[in-house]
Length: 117
Image (cartoon, rainbow, N blue to C red; front, side):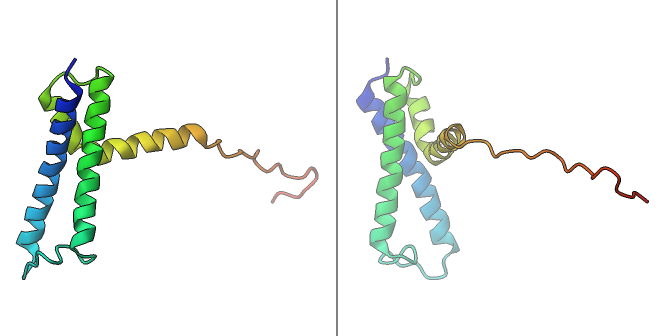
């Protein structure tokens, strides 16, 4: 089994890779770049979002390693990169399993004796 700490580290690196590419694209698009305000919400919001993204990548890669689903660094890195998509898909599966199906109604039956022209 791939070590838990190594999988978490590679998951973090995967999350950082995505964040780095997004930051690169943001810098290239901006007319004037400000490190104090890299996003409209400010630097602290940006750093918080990066920490969350990297943490989710680490958690998913560690869980994959612990369950035996991840056997190497490349798989852990890939799971770190794909972390938001994986969380979204898993959340949809859980919500679909919990929510009851909407009640279906029978089609309306015409009244007997109504004129049909």
